[in-house]
Image 1: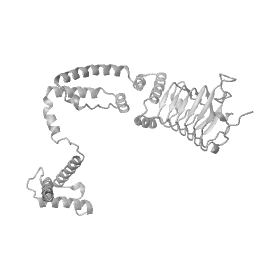
Image 2: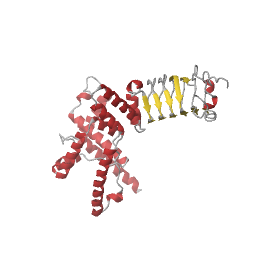
Image 3: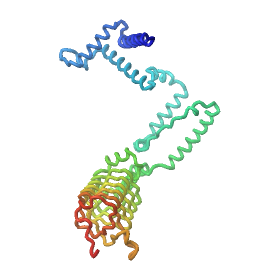
Image 4: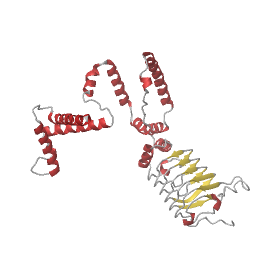
Length: 373
């Protein structure tokens, strides 16, 4: 019974608070409840009707703008209270600006400003690719004594010194490559530095940012024109987008690619040597005159609508490799997709090179004709 008596009082207090929000303005303190409600109602009616004779949204009066701002602040505060989130106070900026005369704050601000001014475009790129995620301190660490705080400061100073040393030692290859590109003066130095930058970018960590950057920067690129020697050697690529690229006559030497999108690319007369491709997409690729040497493995790759023409008499089955000719190379397609793939014109490949592959019955000229087998 007492709850029924309490709820109307709470509603009245909430209603009075809401009415005070609409009535309190910065310029005039004489606006009544009726005038504030009529003003906000008039503004809503103006927005809903869109009458040309009435003032539009761009010609809203200052009083209506203040009412709208107060209403939005009240709604935001209600949402924050419902989510149990604390909002910063409006006077926090002013208090921080008034306390900026403190020496400690000045030192911190100067250090922060100097740090920001020392960053170059390459540094910003590094921060975007490898963002620094701050770590939250546990309540036990926050509630420690003065001695613990001093020990923390000493440890932080030591850690900062070690981090600076580690950052200088573990400078990413992409930063070094970009610095070499900017510092190169001659054309031959520029081409070599650019090739190094491309290889360094391909080996960046597997993140969404790096994948989006690879799609933006390298998609549709003539890769053979970027590489001075036409060779990708010892690279480990993960989750990159290299679609619609031209890899013609490019040699892949000891390359490991995982979840790389090569779709609709051209591999004319390319060379794969001792390379592994896992969960890569070769959909719609033109792989004519492709030569595989050493041990090449395609695992879980997709070759939908691809045209594959493998060349080289050294192709053999992994089951028979090493029995008669130990130096013969082997190519293996493990759990690959060959929907509407075309092997027309390819050299002989034993069917045992295809392990647990799907949609091979929909591929043209599959398996490639084996002479005498």
